[in-house]
Length: 106
Image 1 (cartoon, rainbow, N blue to C red):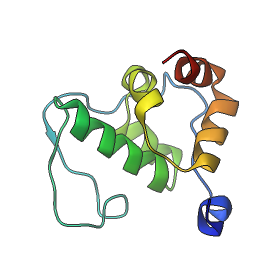
Image 2: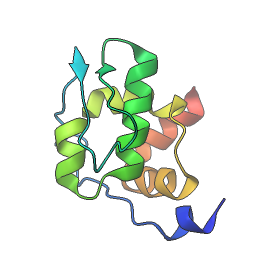
Image 3: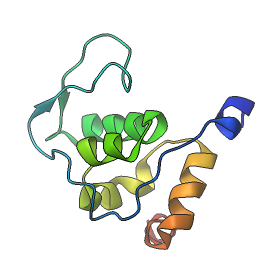
Image 4: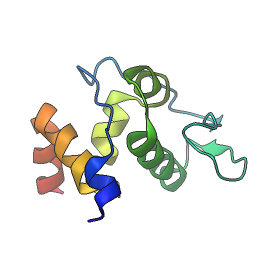
């Protein structure tokens, strides 16, 4: 694990129910979350959806970012396959033990 991942602050919501972001269709993230080439994620494609969720979990600067771009039920479904830094995963799983249980059951 690198020092940046250890030192970086990660936003975590108070509840998964407050995550009510989009779940279908094309979607573009704002530049502060996805600064690469302009890309429309196809939220109906699980691979695209997972990449978008990974970026939001890694780069969200506030709970508003999380609320606007993630869906709680979808996050729970995708959680075991998301590739995110260990410190971010740890913070989320400490707040939401059901994510840890889901990841170990997968």
